[in-house]
Image (cartoon, rainbow over all chains, first blue to last red; front, side, top):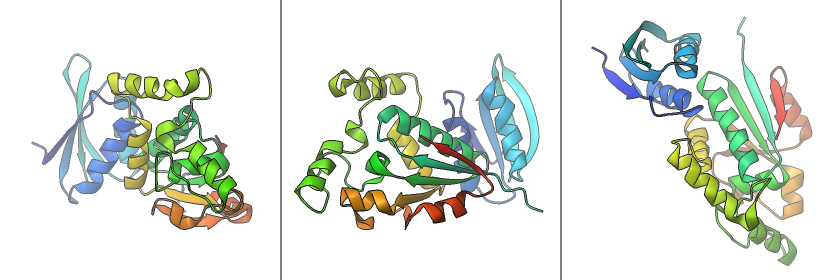
Length: 74
Length: 159
């Protein structure tokens, strides 16, 4: 179970990345964040860009249909 | 060796749609780890004024009139199909309806993300503007030489 959750399934570019980045800035080091997102651009790029910025992507799994969740550790 | 990603945008236009494009690119780039510099010049300066909405900001009657006519992001015209100013509000309602960030939300996000904002010294001089007329996030007033230094080694766009 992650320490924090963020639902960006209703967001569009660039707010998908922006909200993830802002949330990651707010949580404590060592905490985990569960991000709910849609297939396509968010799923392709949110895990990639967060890991490029030094965060650890622990898991990516399908929730249902086109909705996925990504667990990120700060 | 650090591989710094950097995007610098010269924000020349004060048009609603072009400002939206500039702030979309800027916030998106900052969110994926880019260092972002926004250099506001000419009509673009309208977007970073502290007093948004129509206000007589300027040094003399002519620059004050310009300040009033430009009127900030809330009345920024659209570059095509402006319909005498109605289009900005039409776009705003379409953006809200489709859950796309509005220009004001993007500017707020740019502030939170710590995007570097700079104002052009020469255009400020023409339009009778001072640093105190801008939002506090505007870090500095610059000329071409400093902008080139800041943007070196990254990508630069003119919008």
